[in-house]
Length: 111
Image (tube, rainbow, N blue to C red):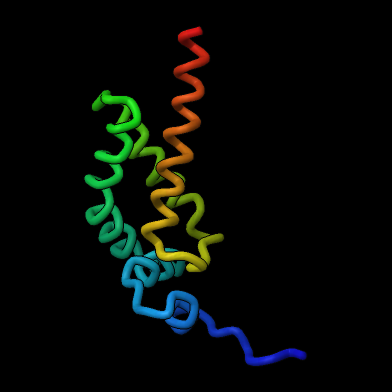
């Protein structure tokens, strides 16, 4: 019943994704302590996440603040990160959650 052993680290990314996910590999490298890997992810996703969050509020200052929050959450969640889905889906889900939470707070303040 045990089946085949679960692959670990970089091999696990390939078996779960079915293809090479460089971003997931960078996140695993960051998880292992390689700070340059986080910088690569930040440089790749900073502008797209900012633009995505801007479309929630049409406010640059809020979008910038939430973008910082997203990357803080990525840092905080690094230890528990497992590449079950492509990294891109994971970070955009963090951004969506941050945007929706802030949207709820902003709506509550208005009413």
